[in-house]
Length: 255
Length: 255
Image (tube, rainbow over all chains, first blue to last red):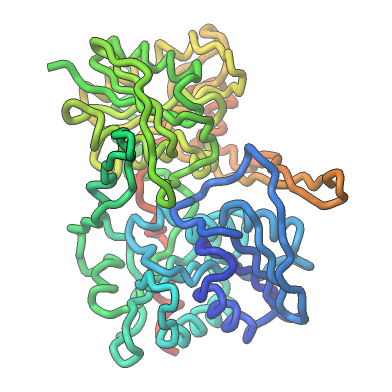
């Protein structure tokens, strides 16, 4: 039987990046798309608990079923694997995101929230992002790399509790230098809110912000991307800081 | 000058757990509360980018300012530190959450999203959760431990890029056995959605689920909590799976 590939994203089921990814995925197997109805960027690992969810069938055809869910990307993964996949999923893909999920952006990203959810549920999962926010971004140079990574992951499988955060520079094919496996760079978003006054003189705040990364060491994703490489960061659904366990144990000792 | 302590949560500014925490925090310094207007459980690390935010002043008095923000817990941290704190914050506290944020619940938790955000922004931060979902839960046995942890963190500071996920069993003081520093247990939520039919016969789905943890080894938070200990897990805002970098590098090599 063909592999079954589940695809989601956070830009919604109508995004160009999703369409590009489902076309590549169909070369490898049957595809189920379960993606948010609306833009869900910045939804991180959030779930919807205070209202019920609906699922809308967009298309059901040989090899490609597409559904839209009015929940978060993580909701989409849970919903699809439990209620809308005809058999066990072999691979979960998320994206292709319009915009970077490198460095700490992985924390805020709905695209990557879905990937981490899938990994924790025991599925191999990969998130893809292109470093362009344009709605009609050009994914053509990225496609051969995406195809290659999907092929390798289907063939070899990922280690347990490991998923991949793949970010791709928005460059012509001739300027892409290859793939680098990296760690996530440390960074911050600063100046998060712009304050404005409404017509009644009352303040409101728009999220904005500048991305500040001073961690451009050779092993970081931000360095790789700046140098024209596709960055692949192995991630996991475990927030424990193992290195700190000794020090915190000392700190908590009885005085 | 007194320490400045910022408090947030995900249960909203009216929760009992928040009130208990702000009372303890006032023993140590000046307190600013910036908490969500509404219940934001399950909001994880999400941010609000598609609409502007409002902040409502609930109370401004000597030593305690309370604000409600119609965004997520992470929005609250960004908003408070940038626009509502009179000086640099010395410590960020989140909670006391009504319900466990141990094991993988940290991933979904708005309470812990706020803690991780604060840590990434360079603040010492601690999240507290009591293992009871009751609105009028009894926090009295937890308070001495919370006071002790706040005191230690203010006195010694946390290592860079480390925050604490503190979970407290809902037990009488006589049955609490002390504090254990742990790693996060592996677990899953399964059977996530209950399917129902609306009066028109159309399906809708309520998030539900059962928590399944088969990782009860001696060093896990779930083991510590089951044994009557308060669990303290050092966490960090870095999703990189460092152990997997070698294996994934091999996997991505040119064939």
